[in-house]
Image 1 (cartoon, rainbow, N blue to C red):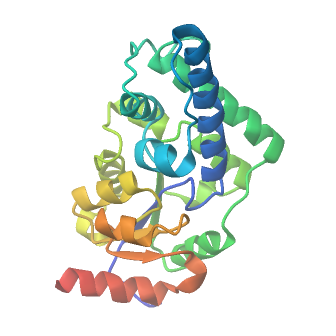
Image 2 (cartoon, rainbow, N blue to C red):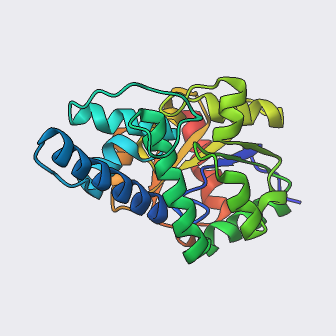
Length: 256
C-alpha cells in the first residue's frame, strides 16, 4: 500500500461534507430578519434585511452559534444581554436568538433532508482505504445527527463539534481549538494533518494551528478571500483533485 506524508485529514462539516451550509444560511436569515422587523416595530429602528454576502459570510459563517449572533448584532451596533443557553427561542437575548436559529434550522432540515457532496465522500473513502486517519471538526451542535442521517458518522475516528466544544470549554473559530483537539484525539502531530474548510473563520483557525496544509473549499466563489485568510490551496470541489494532489501540496508546503 502506498504511504503518504500526512497522517490525518480533519474535515469541516457544513459546506464541505454536507450541503447544509445553505440551510444554515436560510435559518440565520429568517431568524435575523424576523428579529430586525421586531426591532423596527418595538424600537422604531429602520429595517435593513440580513443578507448572505454582507452579513452571513463575514459575521456568522463557521462560527459557534452564539458567537455568530453576537458578531452580527455588534456589526449593527445592537447590544443584547448574553442570557443563558436554556433561554426560550422567544427570549430577546443572544442565547434566545441563537436557539431560535437552531429551531428554524431543524425545521428546514426536517423538510429538506440532508444532502452530501459526493466528491467529498469519495475522497473520504479513498483516504480511509489508505489508512489515513479521519476527523470531523465543526462549530455545529447538530453535527452528530446530521452525520448519522448521512450514514457517514462511523467513518471518522473523532468528532469535535459544538457540543464537545461546550463540554471541554474550547474556543470557537477562528481559534484552532477544535482542530487541535481532533488531532490530539487521533494522536497525530498538527504538522502531519490536513485541514479542510469552506469558511473564512475556518481557514483562519487552520492557519493559527500550525497544520501541515489548510485546504479551502470555495463554494461561494471566494477563492481570493480564503487564500488571503489562511488557506494554502483552494479548490471548488474535490472532483477537481485526487489524493496524490493532496500529497504533492502537503509535501511542497512542508518544504517552504
